[in-house]
Length: 165
Image 1 (cartoon, rainbow, N blue to C red):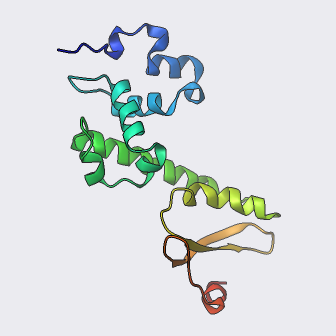
Image 2: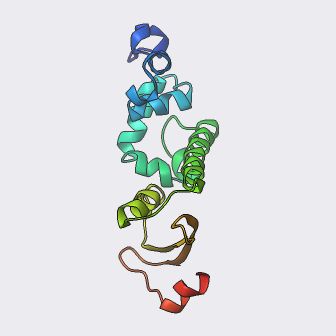
Image 3: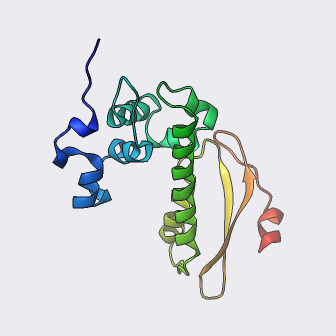
């Protein structure tokens, strides 16, 4: 029988929750943050070991951002409770990014627009054509999806772009 160390057996300064309290969430790795979300591991691995394995097997955060409940349930050590916790945390993160976007951000360069759109679009598995609508003060009023294409192309007619504007 293999022995694993539980988080409770770890020195206090190495435990993810305690580190978050002491040094803030920015000091934690992706695996440590995921371990906090999971709350507990399984009989064979700690929450931290489980989180590390999920990120390694699933190819990182991009997997978590797009994984369905069914895909999460296929991972050893993940049941319905943990899968729904992960999906809820990912959705909350997406909503927080959308909330930040609702703040009146002025768009003066293509980089400004990219910063707003990149968070939502970096994990997409197909080409999306989106339109960012601005008011006369260059504040983003809406972001609309015009077309969802294939892996590397998206067809759009100019009429579809101007119709929303």
